[in-house]
Image (cartoon, rainbow, N blue to C red):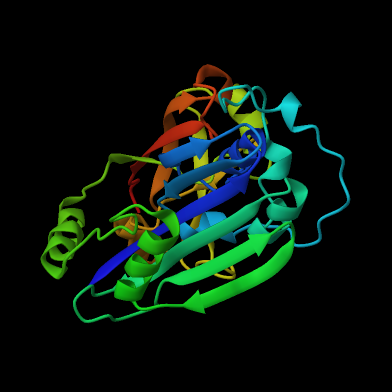
Length: 283
């Protein structure tokens, strides 16, 4: 059984508007363009991501009537001209209205046995200029693949990432974790993290804070700096999560060992990179 997440999206509309959606996917994953074609006024852009949460987490469903000049943000070739942080938090439905586009999206995040069709099924969403055409339709994996190929006219657009054997190897790899070790944080662009990352220094101490009431993950571990929120531990850091439980959230400790603020990264990047070293102290 494999635990993974993915999404595939097709946007149809003006070229710059389509790329506005591409650049405003939130959370922490980098998107990959699968296919693009068309004219400036009638464009089709297909891209993928590795985190279904980008479709729903932290989205604000109460969009206001904003007058947005996409030309201020997107260049002639679809490149990002300036930060689009303010527009990360709109849902796909709201983005279809905001940018006058049609959006079709397949997504899944769950334990999934490809052969046994176990777990949450892939879902399909379809919005056009703010109207819901289809919402959260569940499909079998095979049906999702077939439907995506019919819509996108591209084979193998829906990923087939893991087999059961692959996942066992993936899980067993974490048994070798020992303290100290380093890990890259996720969600570093949230809650003012982009601006705050400009001031972090290597060696700065950070605090690991469990969030049992987190609506997305009851085992979420937030990482705080004296300046405020830094990011979250990736969910695969089982050793840290378990050690915190064992020691009543007093051990392990952590410090920043690498930081790349957004100002030092490429124009397509959406989040600062922050790596921390997690280590044990004497109990």
